Length: 258
Image 1: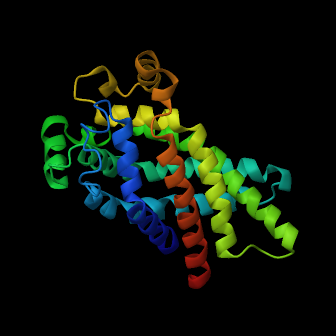
Image 2: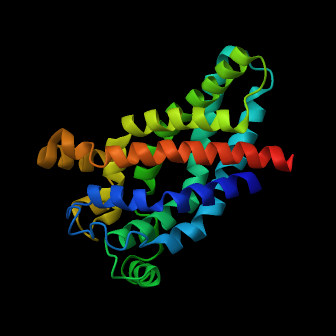
């Protein structure tokens, strides 16, 4: 819990400006109208509050499911074990992540409004369900991301450990996390764009229904392939750096605590 929470806070706060740029690039109103480079830390209170419990819940679920599934399973099933553990961890973590993400992303494209004003507006107009707008699209983005990132991270660590004859250090785990995160970020960008559009959609609009396929279809018709991969560079850069900080910090903190 502590190791996951510390890792989550570190990565989210350090890389917040990159996340803001990515969100504004994916916004339907366009980068400049969404705020450009102004108010680059808009929405940071929402991230600061949600970051620790979100990351803590992810790693508690991931490590526990992994340990349960590892008992009696053959070594060649390890990637499948990591996939299942990461997927279940994402489903649990998203219960905390999505409300935080909804408030944060709306603040990022409305830098003149405070986080509290945006939260009040969502609750007044849409109720609690408004905070969970995009839950399905977030889970549908995070599960494929984790299916790629975590087995790749674990495999790279195992390969590096085998090559050098001992378990990888925390900085080596961080390097593996950077490669795994960057690759997973690139291939799941269209799902991230769809999730952003759903979260930013006005109540009552077609995207507000949360239909991921409909959102992807709309983006493809209006903006084509470039629209589906909007923000791919800051997303890859952010998640590569994020993988390095997040997984490296997690491993280091866990080693210190244990």
